[in-house]
Amino acid sequence: MTTMNISLPETLKSFVDEQVVERGYGTSSEYVRELIRKDQDRQNLRALLLAGAKSRPGKVADANYFDALRSRVQKSGSV
Image 1 (cartoon, rainbow, N blue to C red):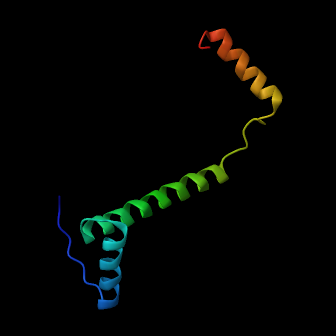
Image 2: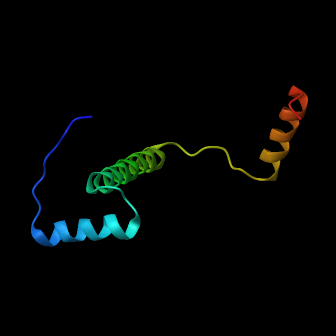
Image 3: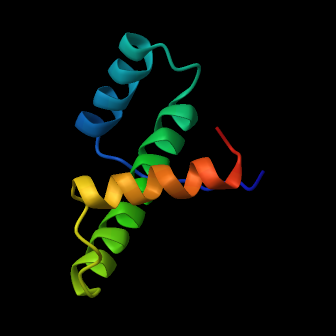
């Protein structure tokens, strides 16, 4: 694992230390890693949502759609 040193004002360091204790993290590094992972997840979700918004509409998922889907599954012997 690579090391990265960051500088924080005392107020932010105190906040991080409080979060470590209150949320049960072992170290401040664990807390920061979790924040970074959540930010990555948010960015990935945003990219997926934007891609979906730019895509062409798909088929309507009405009763006929689900009936045809059930029929295909039954015919394939997966049920």
